[in-house]
Image (spheres, helix red, strand yellow):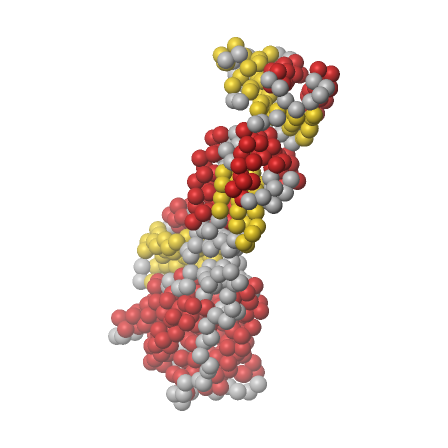
Length: 532
């Protein structure tokens, strides 16, 4: 029974922790669902502890404190989110115990409290129900033991291990991801094993614990563990040298804005202060560039995070996804029960369309690109969605008014293939046109236009040019309706007066044509017209 922790005991504890983590690695990996379900928490904790042990073995003849060596090895060799937090806890202990007399119970309890506090500080956005919660639970229990007069080292480390285990049991209900999967936090479970290894080192008796339970529940439609909402796609980790505290503070702020799961831990080395930087980001280059601005990053590693599995499709359900330009059109299509992907300033990405197809959870999906230039993009997204078990068809609408015509005839009561054909026929039977303003002088198929002229385009070709906006719009409609038509759909842009003028013209000149008028035209288009 040890009465105090000296350097030799620190080494034995580290070796015992490596053994415990090695034996439990697979189970810890299996529990791993937060912050991302990449199944590597047990592996990362083990590799971090092994790095600490390797440093101790290499410095066997060094006059340095074993706590200092252990912490340095852990920080420089930390892997992943949980490994980096474990390294910070070791460093926090070293800050209190290195160079001091062997640690008795009260000294170790204080060191545990300081280490837990420093771990919370190292994490950018600490959450309860995680590794941090378990570490604080163990530290609090150790301090309470001392306050109650149980000051022997054995009593304090037992209290720390028991307190951590109690805190671990509460994590399932503290985080939705853990609750949904029916698991405790994997990093916290690993730290409980590390504290149990300390109890064994101090008392010579291994604590009697039930084995770590594997996952108890799974989502209804999937055999994979619960997966949190989609987030940053890669884990970036590197060591940083040739920097200072001020630069690291700026780096912390920069990386916190770029991603999440940010942990930065510093340690003194023979060459000066070094930092282990860990973050989950989608912009890998920006994370590395931030490190270059702060100092000299090295040992850079980039690991793709586990892909976020989409929810399983619900059999017998159907949805329509439309790509639209502008909030007005988005509101218009949404009002018809359509899911929308809104083009941003830089357009729309294939991944955006795919994400909306998968997010709707429908088994059968129709995609309306509403722009000839987006048909290929929508088709690629549809092909990828089919790999995920969706039945997806793209109706190649070239204008939002063709999309509206397709939506108008959609009937979920029909067989899916028949419904797609009906929607495609309705879109093809809709002649479309638009009115815009010329922003430069150019020679069009309808003659010369000057900046500010109104341009009337039918099916993508300019057919009317003139200085008077209402006249151009009305002539464009006359041309379209000259080939016949029963319904004219008007989507009016920012000028309602133009809409009023066009509607009045239709009522006077084409009184038999039914008119459907909507507001919210796309940016840069004064009037969208569809004739069926």
